[in-house]
Amino acid sequence: MPSRKLTMSIAAAAAAIAIGGGSYAIASAASGSAPASAPPSASSSPASGPRTSGGASNARSGPAAGGTEGTVSSVSPSGFTLTTSAGQKVTITKAPATTYQQGTSPASASAIATGETVLVLGTTENRAIAATQVIVHPAAPAAATAAQVVPFHRGTASTSKQAGQIPASYSQGSGTIVSGTAAGKAAEAALAAYPGGIVDRVVQLNNGEYEVHNIGVNWPHHVFVSQDFKVVGAD
Image (tube, rainbow, N blue to C red; front, top):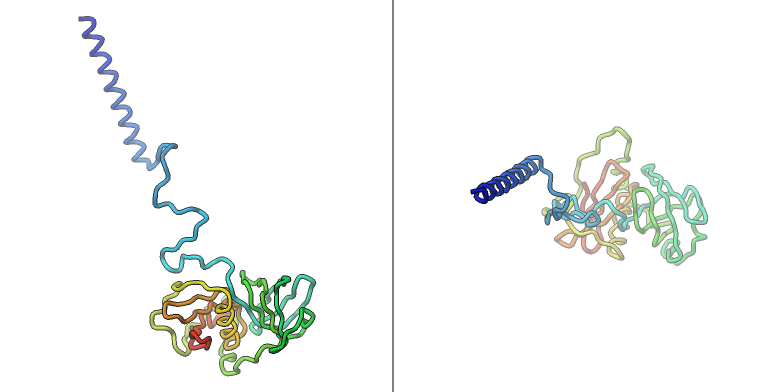
C-alpha cells in the first residue's frame, strides 16, 4: 500500500510539471516571445543584403554610375567643385585613372580651371562624384530642352508633366542599374538634353531603353534614353 501511494504521488507531480510547462508555453506564445535558443525565421533577410521585392525597395540608394555638368567654382589637389545651371553645388574627386578631354581632344587635369564648363561622369553619391571622365567644354545643350528644366527651390512642389515618349511598360523602381560605357553614354545624353541636375543612377528597362534618374531639380526627375543613346522623353 505505501508503495502504491508513492507511485500515485510521483504521477501527480509529473502531471503538475507537465501542466505548468504547458501553461508557460501558452503564455510565451501569447506574448509573442520565443525562447532564446529558437532559430531565426527562414523568411528573415540578411542585414547586409539588398531588399529586392517591391520594385522601388531594391538597391536604389547606394553609389551608382552617373554624372553632372556645370561651371568649375574651385580647384584643389584632390579635385574640384562645380555649380550646375540649376544652382546645385557638386564636389568632384579625381583619381589616377580619371581621364580628361578638352572638347573632343585628349587633355590632362591641368585643363580644369575656375570658370570652365565641364561634364563629369563617374560614381555618384548624393552631391559628390568620384570622376572617371571629365570633359572640358562639352557640347552645348539644345536651348529648347534646356529652357524647360525646372530648378529646385526648397518648399516648392515638384513639377508633374511629361515630355516626349515615356515607355509604355515603365513603372518607377523597375529595371536594372547599369554601369560602365552604357551608363556613361546614357547619362551624357540626358545631361546634354536637360542640364542642371545630377544623375545618380542609370537603369536599363525591360525594353532595352534607359531611365536616367536626375536629382537636384524639380523637373525632370526621369529622362528616358533609347538604346542608341538618344533622349526620347522625360517626366
